[in-house]
Length: 284
Ligand SMILES: NC(=O)c1ccc[n+]([C@@H]2O[C@H](COP(=O)([O-])OP(=O)(O)OC[C@H]3O[C@@H](n4cnc5c(N)ncnc54)[C@H](O)[C@@H]3O)[C@@H](O)[C@H]2O)c1
Image 1 (tube, rainbow, N blue to C red):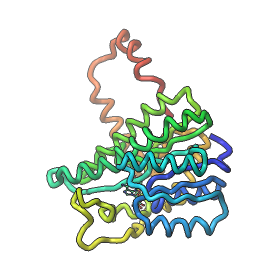
Image 2 (cartoon, helix red, strand yellow; image 1 turned 180 degrees about the vertical axis):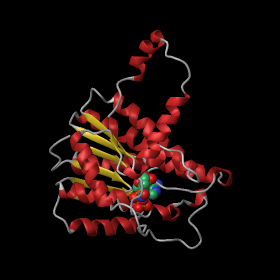
Image 3 (cartoon, rainbow, N blue to C red; image 1 turned 135 degrees about the vertical axis):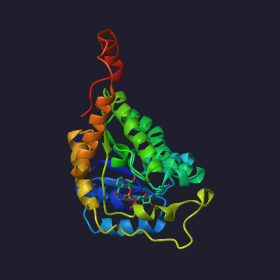
């Protein structure tokens, strides 16, 4: 997708961390922005930050991505203000770390609700509207290296992010003949408030910790604005995988090699050619 100036981006989790990094870069590119986030204070701080740079209009929406009715209301509000969106960034995410044996339904329901259902809700609400508009567009789903590698103490998070990678791969195939591109973002470590995810944990899933922590960017990791630049470049180049952290490359390669070595026997040529159209072309 080219010529982003004047186009409209909708970013969930846009009030902080990676979402705000994308917003800053998109604004510099002249895009109109819709920041959708459940943290009102962070939204207001983000707006102040964004207004320091020249760029398009900014609309702030308080939104919990797990709420389907609210997602539809958000889409209606964006249609009324901008006539629709061109770039959808399903980015909001949370983490409940710990060994799986110590975690329960409240942890599963909260993390899968935000990280997976949030992406599903964004897609089901916005994609038909984007397609109906018929203009060039792009969807960026934020996964993680946790969607490429199962890691210790991150079981629920990895389950959610593997799901985001898988659905994004299918989505890329499904939209191949449409003007909508797809990318999946798989960052490693980025300076953000993800370590204080529990600040946004609703009461029905156990609520925030008694001493509620503010989001403070982690001490090390990539600057979210650098990540935003890589996302913008991927949208412009219609690149599918956005793997921002080379530190994880050899782990992913070793996992790939382990998987390849687990395949037994030689392929049946008849089955192989029957499966080719089902599998589709290899994505890049
Ligand atoms: N920071 C990293 O190192 C890293 C690495 C890989 C992937 N990610 C992913 O990047 C995405 C952004 O996270 P981040 O690191 O910027 O963290 P962050 O906590 O700084 O930002 C996440 C934003 O999502 C919002 N949010 C949380 N729950 C929400 C909900 N139910 N509805 C709407 N908004 C909600 C928060 O208010 C916050 O503004 C997440 O999907 C995360 O899993 C982060």
